[in-house]
Length: 385
Figure 1 (cartoon, rainbow, N blue to C red):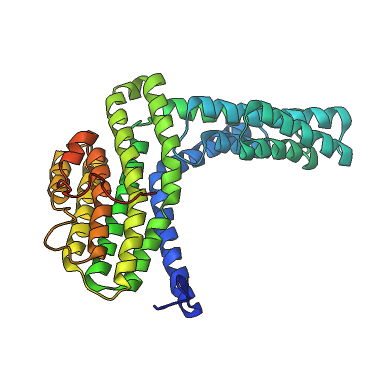
Figure 2: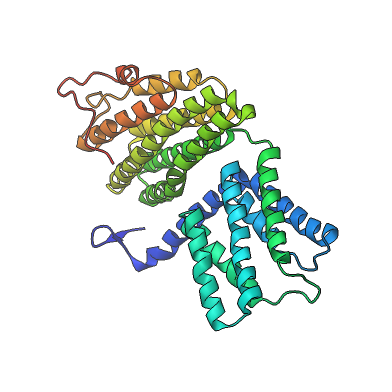
């Protein structure tokens, strides 16, 4: 796949680029689904239980809002907390109550719809500042005033439905076990998988001077931003769980270690993008570089070993030792450095190796000591992202 006008791709290359992007998005989406599968099942169970209780026990004919309140209170991602379930569940109930009060007092109509909407949005804003949450509360209040009740329904039946759904969501948060380590482990595993696979693809492209493969690796690295953006909230939730949940308190030390690991893995992912861009530029020159491809490949293997250790909760020492051996070979003045392209790549790999070593548990000073001393400079390379 050739280039035209500098960095612009020819139109004939667009389908291949779009297909690669689609593959990356599908892969990341499948990983998110696997990570959140238990939470998706909890949402389904909670909504079904709330609906069944209102229909079978309370005798409500269409308790739609019970299922809705249970679903939004439980949440579809694995960041559920008791406080969050209470806010959203009771917020949904408040939105329904606003609609019921307007309907009982003033009936339905255009001006009632407008007043109900603004009141619902105001209630949502007071409870939570999230845009989706506020809109959802407003929509539920409007639903009450615009959708007719069942013939046998009594006033405020739908408020009761929403309240039942909120209670079910809170019970799900309290009863269903939640391992505080799972979120940070999943994020660390996802980031390190992308780091490992991107480096392996970049190494293969570098060894064969395959510009097309190098572009695929760079596209893969760029498509990981969603993982990077979400890991901080996941860590915050896990750290909160270790403080307020007795079952999770015993995991506090491991969650702290995982927080450090993910912090440096995040830095490494940003550095990988720089390395992927550099390997693309080198591959486009048409010169095969198997020696330096081996360095990139070994860093990818080190990231893979670290992922396995973090995912299983086993010792990170083997990964640290392997990465230390790789770092010791990152000498920009070594015998295999033939030109400025080689030297620049090695200089970029040095901070990446340090980030991975710190993710494996080494302090910064110890990680830097694993690198060969630079004879003509004390810097570790050009600025990075």
